[in-house]
Length: 204
Ligand code: HEM
Ligand code: HEM
Image (cartoon, rainbow, N blue to C red; front, side):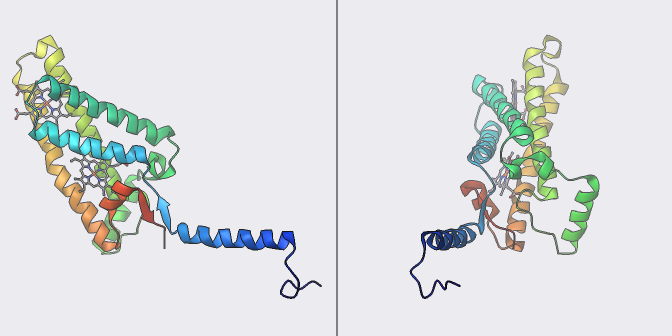
């Protein structure tokens, strides 16, 4: 029997030991996981700043207001594609959109102070995300109806729907941020930073 401690390492042995070192190095680097790819991060912050700009900064009904609104809808269309056929498993809807039962179980666990940690969106975060996206698409559609459908020209109700949708998003955004902050504290991580930088701590 050869004892590698007494003999100079054979080329094969050095290879094995090098690959063990690599494996160790990988374990070290793998305690972080790239959950949000660059596309998701650019999507998120463009959607957030675009929405806030259209709510607070652009002149209601101006060209820039309309183009920015349609741009947000286009961003969401991209995100839906990315969630269906994109390469990042953490961003894929099939991996984080909960069933009603799953959502209920998560909310119960959260109420009991023991929500499990997720690498992708947790079930409540997933529902919030889908609601925000649906409301922003509806904003775009109501804006389009208001400006492009002659029969609705000057109709109050469609303007009110548009205003209501914008206020609904504005109401949910602070809850969305609060949810991210509460979950960050509970699991001792920084979800907002992860949405900027892309990584999360691997599952313990
Ligand atoms: C998707 C993001 C959008 C946001 C956040 C947004 C937000 C708003 C807000 C807050 C108002 C003021 C409502 C009020 O207090 O009366 C407004 C008005 C208006 N928006 Fe948008 N909007 C969006 C998209 C669009 C689009 C895509 C269009 C048209 C293509 C549009 C057309 C208009 C028009 C014409 C008004 C003036 C309505 C009036 O005369 O009362 N918006 N929007
Ligand atoms: C202002 C409008 C905002 C909208 C419409 C919005 C919408 C969204 C959406 C759609 C997602 C899902 C991202 C994806 O998977 O593609 C998301 C995630 C997230 N957002 Fe926002 N967001 C807004 C503002 C903010 C702000 C201001 C913050 C923090 C300061 C924030 C923090 C987060 C975090 C941390 C996540 C990931 C949560 C997780 O790890 O599961 N959002 N947001």
